[in-house]
Image 1: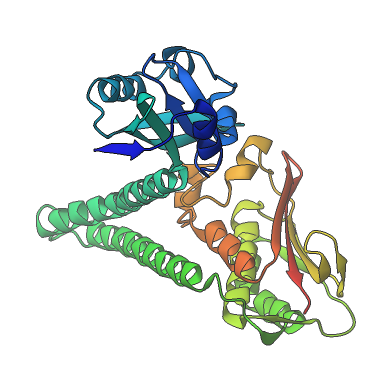
Image 2: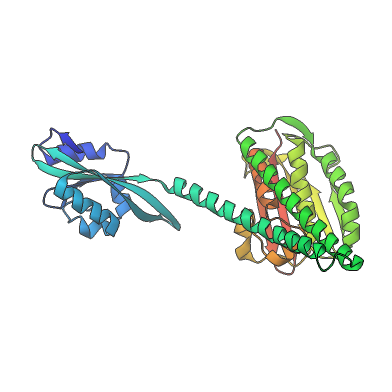
Amino acid sequence: MILKVGVSMPTSFSSLIYAFPLPSVLIGESEKIEALNPPATALLGLDATGRHYITVIRQPAVLDAVEQTLKDGMARNARFLGSEGLRDTTWRVNVCGVESISGPMTLVTFEDVTAVEEAGQMRRDFVANVSHELRTPLTALLGFVETLRGAAREDPVARDRFLAIMEREAARMAQLVDDLLSLSRVEAEERVRPTAPVDLSALLETAVQAFSPMATQNGNTFRLDLPPDPVVIPGDVRQLQQVVSNLLENAIKYGGRDKPVDLVLSAPMLEPTIRTEGVHLTVTDHGDGIAGHHIPRLTERFYRVDSHRSREVGGTGLGLAIVKHIINRHRGRLRIESSVGKGTRFSVILPAR
């Protein structure tokens, strides 16, 4: 397909190219760049007017498409890989022949498809991670079933031991499925901000009571610091319970034995990070802490600082991802601070109105 344009002067072409919202480059019959717009200049890193297109684009797939279109004028597509700071970008390149009064030209436009590529990669990673997480317990279950039907059929001691392991692995799969469903529900509701009144003070007291047996078994004690008056904010009580539960469970599991867990809730005050009045909830453990390079990735799905230890204590790698999405739904902020050997603090900032 050849686009016909009844314009004869390069300056008119330049005006037309400048009006395009996408990065656009016009290449003349001499194979030199006749015009490009500011988005193209930013993408390519220079004003390349008058230069040969090979010295500017420099990516073989795009060069091949341009070369063929210069010969026959037919439309073609290619991919261009760029960068924006520390982020890699992907562009769909459309190459099209342009027939004008002054001679044939080639128009090259760049469409940013980075978000689409990243979404596709996230889906692929998600499927791979779920498959990996389910494969281990399923393999264990199948192996033990085979053993119980064979060598251990008449061995009550081995049977009881294998059944206990099978129960643990089945519970791990059930927890993984529950977390996946929770994550799916939270993501589906993330655009709708909840407005029901929630008493955070009462919610924290209930959570502490619920986790006291688990904390006692691990030798932990809760130190709860609440304002004198109830703290009521707009929210989804079920999801906020899930946030507190996940943070408390992490503090017990990874905060070390025989150490305190601190819970502090502030009264409503101006919070610059959310530009309105908000409340500050912190959950602090005094365990081994987390190295700094792990902290930015803690809320990624299935990311674990210590994969073996996480699986041993029953972690699915989805808890903090769920926490992040719930806090986003409430238009809040999550902050994580940690020092190796000193413990970790999770801070949740939520709007008070």
